[in-house]
Image 1: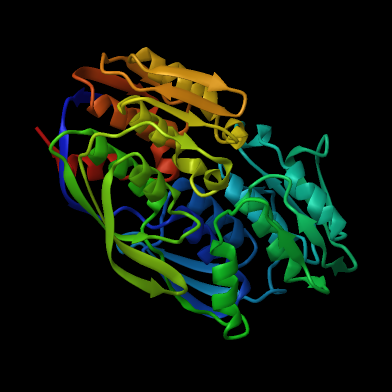
Image 2 (image 1 turned 180 degrees about the vertical axis):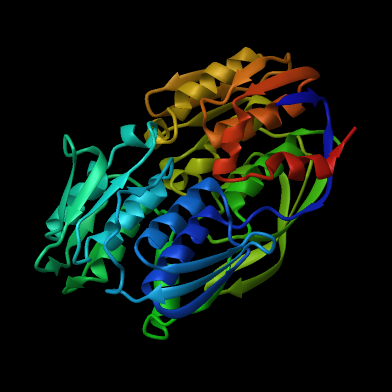
Amino acid sequence: MEIIGKKSLKGEIKVPGDKSISHRAVIFGSISEGETVVENILLSEDVLNTIECFREMGVDIEINKEENKLRIIGNGLYGLKKPKKSLDCGNSGTSMRLLAGVLAGQNFESTLIGDSSLSKRPMDRIINPLRKMNVNIHGVDNKYPPISICPSKELYGIEYTLPMASAQVKSAILLASLYAKGETKVIEKKTTRDHTERMMEYFDEDDFKGKNIYVPGDISSAAFFIIGASIMKDSSIVLKDVGINPTRTGIIDVLQSMGGNIGVKNIRNINKEPIGDIYVSYSPLMGIELDSAIIGRLIDEIPIIAVGAMFAQGSTIIRNAEELKYKETDRIHAIVTELRKVGGDIEALEDGLIIKGTSTFYPGVLDSYNDHRIAMALSIAALNIDGKSKINDDRCINISYPQFYESLQKIIME
């Protein structure tokens, strides 16, 4: 993708449905009884992988791509069928980790596989707590995919303190707890997104009968436009119907701390998730230090926050973000390497970044590392640099936001 800067952003857009909530809507719809209708679902590669996994287990899922809608006929907690082949999660760590929790309580053997990138991502973080629940689960070197799960006579509830801030690990345990005897308690040292808890409560209202779900816009996708409008002069945009779950709004808090001009209006609740319209316009940003308490609320937004910090005054320090190393790529390495190519003054820490704001930038040829969030963050950076830049391997944005460049084009002003 070739990008010509320097631009401003003006107008109103809707970002696609939240990826985390979309995954969970498919999962809970599939293990509930009866019909679940999901509106505004994100039909990205990751979510489609989750859909295909449940289809392999006998769940009837009808996709309406034109309306971004799903119709799921759930099989109930114990109605899934043994798949005829390994369940392919593709590049989706969310699919693999959450499915492991569901499969823990089934009466058939199953194997979870992924692509070359996912096969290098650590799964011991779910294997260890699930084993404590008496789940018969194994991985390569007890750490990496493929993950095999065999039936257990009985699962037991546990009390488990998360060693790292991870909503995926928490969710795997909570999903397994649906099949376990006794109480399960998960203790977090740092707050992580709570979409699983909210949806579990929503479905439990009717004893896991099918429900109607509206998926709010993904604030992690909105973050690219939020930072873009903040750093590009004369910008002013509105992002409609975005999820503003307090475990996800770290990006808003950080931007306000940096001096950003951002607000939320038209706040309401839909299927236990808060939603609103985000207003943001250009404002000179100042560097800040991100403390450990907020990292769990914006781990996916750190690549684009680093871009915002590059154009800010002063230094921004990000620590306690070691989890970045275990995403689709080592995002610490990717951010440092690529932003330096366009003049960014950025240094890698063992668990984060130091970014010093500067004013001298130049276009470049940038690599996405086949990571959707890196590709989109670099695109926003390039849009605020005078000249023509190129983003290699931009197709990876299909993982979370297939229409990203189309949305961007709607609000770009010369």
